[in-house]
Image 1 (tube, helix red, strand yellow):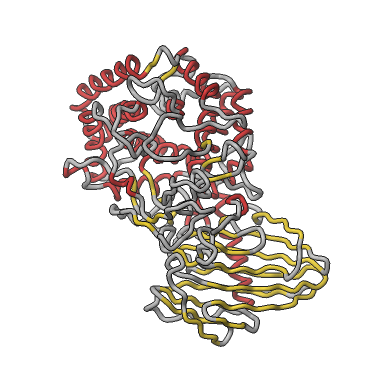
Image 2: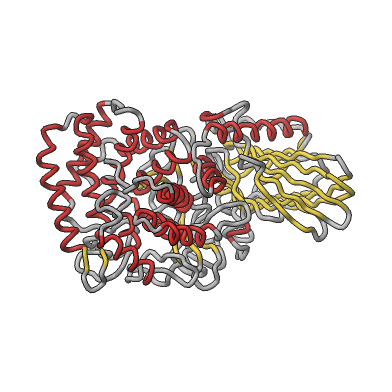
Length: 613
């Protein structure tokens, strides 16, 4: 089984797919041609599920970084005999720049080793295992490299060295002296396509330089945020772009599946999909760290993916595949041992079947943000009809129980956050009524909005807990209550908001200053770590209540759990401080961006109640 710390991985992405690389030069995860495709390398989840390593033959001191303003990885190995720099990238399309990066990515993993001093012997081991390790391909040496065939893939490896092939594994050893450079490339294509030719060293070098310039051009066009933690905000913006499927604008929740919420536990989910739940907070982050084009692309994807669902009087689906797919049925991969024995390993996510009433509010809040940012954008007729239906559905169903924002796999309940977001759906629907052509619905929506507000204030507030709690009639705390001032339901200076923030800071915060989602039973065995998103929410909420210094302290407690290349996992083990959960986690980076902006506004004395109204 795989035991390597999750924090040891760095992300590569071409805005279509993703790879994870260890600090010692092993690609242990690669899904192609899409984020949610079966993995070609999956040693992340099982030692025998495939990898591609390039590393010095002996001991080495290792440092690494992303090339400035990019997601191109540079790893430096210092050995007793010399120093070699390994550069890794998923190639962007040729001469893609700015907003266009990822549109025509060729699906090629590029690696280049350069000896900068002395002499270094490198060892390469190439063991592709398509379909999460089920396929052991047949390998055939060709001029300039190796072809591997098996299953649905044909893999072309360009390698400038003599290979020794043993079954479905190829190895090479090569010695470099100062100023010598070797280029490697892996092209993953469909098994029925024409096999691409091998790339030579010069072409690989040019495409790496072109990919660097592509990322830098995107970064230059998206340097919007000015304020504290500016570098972290900019980097988080790049991570969000890296997790974007460029052809549709969808943003995946994470690059991986089945990295657990507890080592050895069963809370192992596939996060390589797009959640409607994330929409409003994602657009806020994109507004801070990116620009209107990314916002419009993401919202456009959601509107297209969800279109017609409400026409059949069905619940709005909570999540979609990156191409807009709806059926994300979950299945198990029993042949994989899982990260640190965490099984079952899953692909697909059965949460797509759940009812979550909060999604109506998140969708309409996203629409309202986008409309505000684009000078009252005129929506297409199908989008207006869909948004109108979403507001009507929230008004009709807000009193029903659901599974809530955290996708509880137990009985449906009356979750406070779900009611809150139904209130948001109507509040934003009222604001959007002139754009939606819904002036005749405003009176009814205002009446229902008032009913929801009254229910939240009377049934959601628990005097014994001195806080808004997880569900009506339940004294248990839930970090999602921190979003109340963010969405403008109550101002930050409301005594009940302050009391709720203080209660969560006191009772849901671990010894490291990180926030757990909740402590109530959720119908699943085992436990989970503290959530970085919820910790950033606490920092954000503290800023909205005017407590800038405590907000900074909470923010710093979360940020220090980024790894050496600035990537955040989903959770942190409360006992060990080790990052856990799917990685890197978009929601954690979204929380970082939004909290940094709120703290900046609090410190600057700018009004910021979280409302978009």
